[in-house]
Image 1 (cartoon, rainbow, N blue to C red):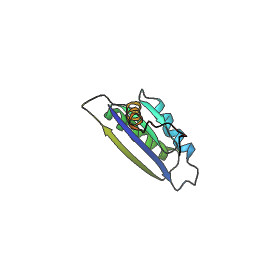
Image 2 (image 1 turned 90 degrees about the vertical axis):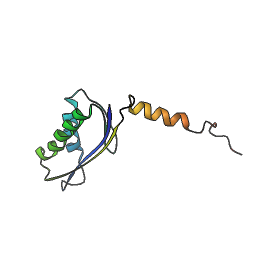
Image 3 (image 1 turned 90 degrees about the horizontal axis):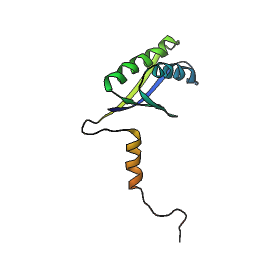
Length: 106
C-alpha cells in the first residue's frame, strides 16, 4: 500500500483557493481510497495506480473550475516489505518520544 502526500494549488486565481480544493476533494470522495485532509494538503492511502489515477482527475478538476495554471506536488511513500499506514507511522514516532513526565522542571 502506498501513502501519498498531495498538494494541488491553482495559480492566478486569487488568494482564496478553498473552492478549488473542495472540488478536487469531491473527485477523491467518489473513490474508495482512504484520505485525510490537512491544512497544507491531503494524504491518500491505497493502491498506487488508483491513487495516481485520481490525482490526475483532481488536478484536472481545477482547470474545469476555471484555473489556467495548476501546481501539483506529490510525495509517495511506497513500502512493499510490510503493510504501512499513516497511523502506524505516527505510532512509531510517538513510541520513540522522550517518556519523561511533562511539567517536571528543576
